[in-house]
Image: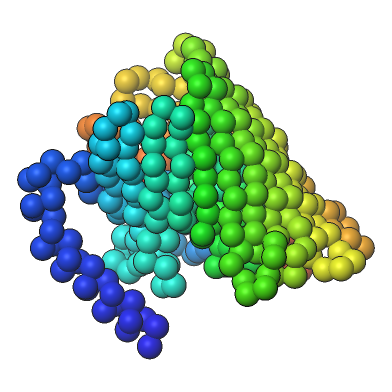
Length: 361
């Protein structure tokens, strides 16, 4: 029933867009339709199609391996006096099947409205956390390969693996985006300051499912510094606290980047899980059209009354730009699990390769 309702809503939205797009664009309203289509052939051993540990191998056509396939609408209106109204609606898609990436949320990646002026930008709605914003300019992979990038999955909590909803995410698997959130962004020369609060919106809930955080970034002359701290509550007001920091520097034709992140979650009245992520890597622009990247990630996990575990992951990939909007890519990743992180009976090592094409529109 839910799937039928979603299909009906999708058809209605498409009809509305078709009816309104022409006059909207003709009037130069500042609305932009954009997106990414990313498809690749991927083969992996010791990983499931969802990049979880496995004792098997698989091969197939995948969507969004390099960069998540999506489409969206964004726009602005000049309100005069240097003020603007802004909005962004963005939905993930499975380009290999044509299905929506999230059956429960149509605009699962972004759904917010904001006001902007000389004082900064205030946005309200579903949007990325400050952890996600902070890691974006300093991730060695440039926020690519979200399915198996530990900075996205573990440090920025996209797939924290705790099985508990922390913050108003609508999901027990991750806390990368928040519903019902307010975010302030102020840019002051080379410095960017951010503050965020997400409302839990539970009846009589107080702080339950809420989230708050602060972030700070600096960018000038090829140097980028970025960091954030954010705390989340679950439905029982238990805490998940996370912070990360990183730096990147453009030195000639090479961009170097490194990060460190840590999060600690109260998973019960007597148990906690702590996860740490370190990363380092570089991208060499070999030619104006070709980039080569090498990055390494180290993940450590400790849990109350359990042995510590984790994994190390090496990722190497190259991109070749066919045009400003279209590129080919090849990727290789190798993972070494530690301390039984992958589970009993699973392979101690995993590897994968991807060959794909990505197009921006």
